[in-house]
Image 1 (cartoon, helix red, strand yellow):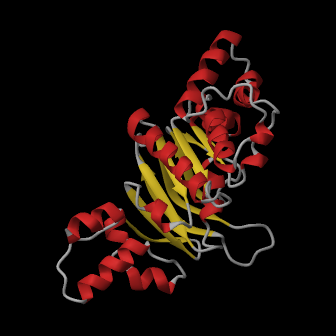
Image 2 (image 1 turned 45 degrees about the vertical axis):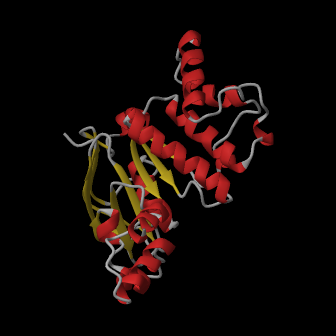
Image 3 (image 1 turned 90 degrees about the vertical axis):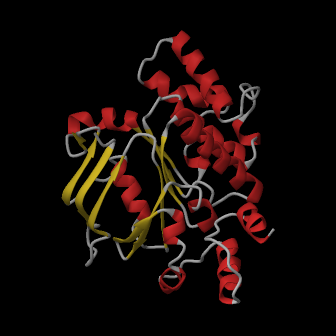
Length: 271
């Protein structure tokens, strides 16, 4: 059974002449790590909002553990299974103290106090913020704030976390902290990840990549398969990772190396 099943989905914003999404189809299984890339206006964020029932499709269906997102009475069940992390953590942090912020969602669904304490401690440990329980949220770094936002979602115990460009506002260190956290949650804890990003290097850590343009999924495959399509990616205003660019240039010069996605992989191949 699929965790998420997106079937022939179309979405059009009121007053807009063209749909923001057209004929979107894909499945997500428990434990998958999927990345969705595309230029601004390609439909990535609209798709993220549909997965979390912030929007509903005009055509087609989205099933979350076989529950249709169009079923109004099931919205909170769906959101418990599919957590959402937004681009700006300040829009998601609601409390002045770290532990209070993680507990906020749990308190709203009347989880018992002892269970809240357990989940808060567990979530903060998973994002490497244990010891920060009494810290003021406004004094955290950008990367710490985003990890706090992720902790708040983890505490709700979702099957899947959708992250909509979570590193867009962070410096390189903050981006690394967040991506390392996401990778850990997926590989070590089995949480399904859907990462929407415009940083191509981040997409390389996923198991599968979907490329969006003009509201449609134009390419899908493993990161290696996707980043072979350098000319097409450039044609839709996407960069390719610098390492991929270097490796491709070396191949053109007659150096026989395999497809490379990481700096370590490039060093190993050259050595």
